[in-house]
Amino acid sequence: MPIINRIGDLAPDMAAWRQHLHSIPELSFDCPKTSAFILERLAEIGVDEVHGEIAQTGVVAIINGQGEGPTIGLRADFDALPIEEQTGVPYASTHPGKMHACGHDGHTAMLLGAAKYLAETRNFAGRVALIFQPAEEDGGGGEVMVQEGIMDRFDIGEVYAIHNSPGKDIGKFHTRPGPIMAAADTFHIHVTGKGGHGARPYDCVDPVVAACAVVTALQTIVSRNHHPMEQLVISTTQIHTGTTDNVIPESAYINGTVRTFSKDVQAMVVRRMEEIVAGTAATYGCVGRLEFEFGYPPTVNDDDKAAFAARVAAEVSGEAGVDADVEPVMGAEDFSYMLEARPGAYLMLGQGEGVGVHHPEFNFNDEIAPIGASFFARLVETAQPLR
Image (cartoon, rainbow, N blue to C red):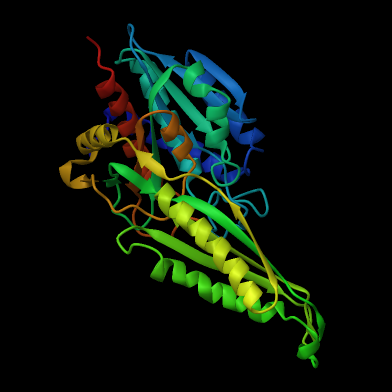
């Protein structure tokens, strides 16, 4: 890999930073130890400005280049997941029930590595805004940082992020113009009937049978109401009802997720779910009620910025090391809010074979940190060259 030599020299530092962060995972917005560690490293690196307590524990740091120019934003998330770690590594989580199972520790280390190089060399015009974000997994920290005004406050003109990708070739970048990750919405369905003795169903209005019928009917939205060439996932993931074998319960609860790329498709799903829930429940004499919770919007790359990012990635990993038209995935990402606010691109970076993210045995591959950091650095130097 033609990584930047100085960043290659920083590989042991990035690994040490990442492994320390791995040992102190924190959740959502409540990441004081992580934030403090980032602030300590930024002070050592010698950035020009540091702004903390954004979205509670988020940080934005500024590095000034040589001469006037725009500001480019580079984002790394740093929150962990509520999972009991099973990696067995020496630097495993010291916080029970929490672990870095998605590689956000690695994303932060990559951005710190790029920051150190950029602060040393300043071979660019304008400024770099280093965005260290909490609460990607839960809470929408990206949305909160945008709502708190980071794009205008720091005059950010474009913004980029990388996520590790297990199961993909080490050092291979994946991106695409347009939608790359889906919107993630949640549905809650309440079916109410009339409870009673299980031996006398004729005296009851059974919500269990109605709930089962609702779940089955929901599957027809994808198969019968939706154009097959557009992506849509509707997954029922929970059904809760009843407490014992001889009692027909009063109510049933159904929960699941909807993944879409189009607002038109999303609206169609909400409409059909409302009709199916109310109509199917009524068929069985019950009352059905839908609560639809809108979550992260789709992550949509700017066409030109995605093409530019792919060209820069090819300088780092070679032409064969970039897939610039990868298939979109149905997972979700709150970097979507930053891409709604400013043009930019989101890229995946292969980290080799191993278990997938959100698995108790997942571990970020430190080998790819210099690759990601080199991409960030070259992105800045290419987007904002010295005249």
